[in-house]
Picture: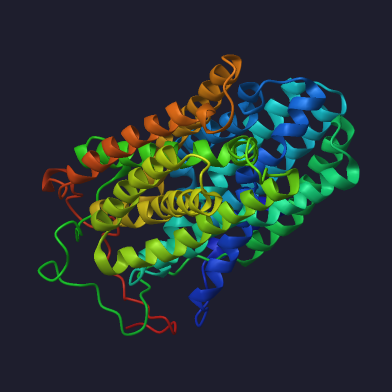
Length: 464
């Protein structure tokens, strides 16, 4: 062990929970990270002032967000094994440094009107913080809550969806106070970077991993004969997981579900304004920011409600709901147009709740199919689907809207084509979910990864 204080403090061995440690302290630690990095979903609040002050198109102003999501998936994929090896405290610290630094670099870019610095800071550097921070608590939570994996990951990952619920009105208020010009945007980015650094440090200090062999008091792993068909009692390594058709079916369904939701999220504020611009009740800037907050609430609550529901009805069934009902909701939006504002809000809230639920349920789906052995690393590799969707969703919505605007169209007509594209993608995801079957035993680990026998440690800390 090195004598250098910082690596020593962040070492996985230093974060093993002592006897009597309550597992319910771990979700708040995860939430402190996810509530911060969830600010990414409030990016649409910055789009209009950036477009005005730096003379950007809608497609170009989406670039920092798109790059951030791409880097999220790539850093999660390549860093997943490191997170498993070094532990959640190290990962949360790396996330804190990258995410906060990204805002500081973006602040410098806005202040100097160098948009490439905004893209570099928020998109590239901040995106690495997003990816490492996103996966940092997942395998830890699954190990702490083997009896309720869907609920556990839902609690933490709901924070990522809820981050914009805080950031959206907060960012709008800062832009109102500092001004919507490049100087005001720079000050808002600076405040974000400093405040989030302090907030995320709480998770770094609080997180713990369970001792080897730990299990909840009174809980016994279900026998293979009593579990659902898609729940395996065996473990699959990350290297073998990506060789299975199950992994790629989940990749496709996640990509389709994310594309359908992220296209709305990235353009939420201007989208609702455009939709009702020609009606008797247009949507103003403050109301548009409120709409972003409402969608964030749906995204956040869906992560907990639907992932907890998956513990009861199964992962495959709940994804049938996400993808099937999501496609129907998009069809309603296409048909109804701007005829009813409440109907539009209800449908978009449903879509975003399914979007959030899909994220929160996927770690438990992976755990069911591949076991807990390297579920964090497998989850990181699967998040490349999010990278792809992070480009596709905003690109489809913004490119179609820009093209329709150039053709002189306004209102719902700006988005009709992209809405039907989303319906088709959700249908593709639905089919991919139906193709998921139990993993072939040839991909299972031949022996348990922890070969030496160890006493099972119960929740109270004593050997069982």
